Length: 335
Ligand SMILES: [Zn+2]
View 1 (cartoon, rainbow, N blue to C red):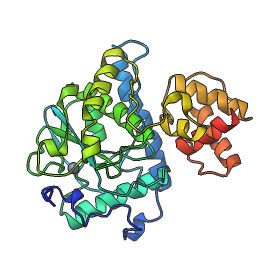
View 2 (cartoon, helix red, strand yellow):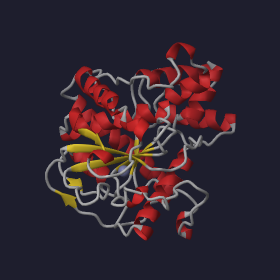
View 3 (tube, rainbow, N blue to C red):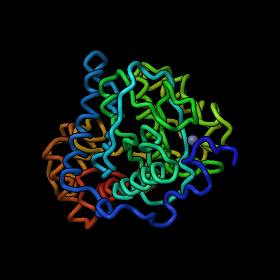
View 4 (tube, rainbow, N blue to C red):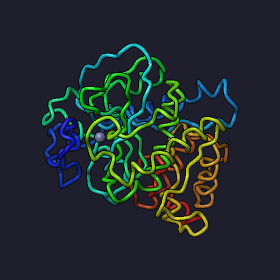
């Protein structure tokens, strides 16, 4: 392939094709400590958005929940922060299967396989990219230290995602292969939210969002997705200008008026501790309607998390306390 400079996109890079061997001590998934880190990471990610919101309109969009490397059970690595602010955001596709798996546990396993692949096969010192967005709409830290640097809004961990030209570039990997298909609605929405958050924290201009192929000879991020990067730049610019998350409907994505519960669920943001806004309020009302009473404060705190866990247990789905596509689908079917 022409994209040899970026090992994540080599044909042998088979993320998601069967269970890749993982170090044994990682295979059991997040530890209780890791789980706590999820919550701390989520709160911190939103808190960082709140820092900016202090000087912005009250309706300023919230940053996404970003799961830390500790949360998904990354190998411990030592990274150094490069001083200065990055000036560009580079979008990739993982060249992995376009799976229908949307769970957080799938996202965590994907992140572990990606890190193992980058370290063991490509010889990187960590995952190459700073952040990952899954087809289920989950945002994860990729390279250790990236989230703390983003929160600081100054300095970054130099990545390994654009061959020898990584200086000043933040990399976001999107799970899937987008030569012909496009990211899922949930994934695209999460990408707009994450990209806008990164641009806001670092002062990156939306026009400085590009695809991997704009820098190196590579397929990445796929013909179909690359053709939509103008839409992404516009959505991020609108979000930053208006303070309200603005997400276009990509070709082939279901139109709002015709959406069923499952499709609507896939288009809604993933919520967790620290999230706030109209979607949280809606989820709280749906929880109450489903018999798990919680005040509709619009803020996702301890009581909401307890109600979500109770709802998930009653529904016999993974009780992780986050409202992702599966939980949204169940809530909407009760609503
Ligand atoms: Zn790439």
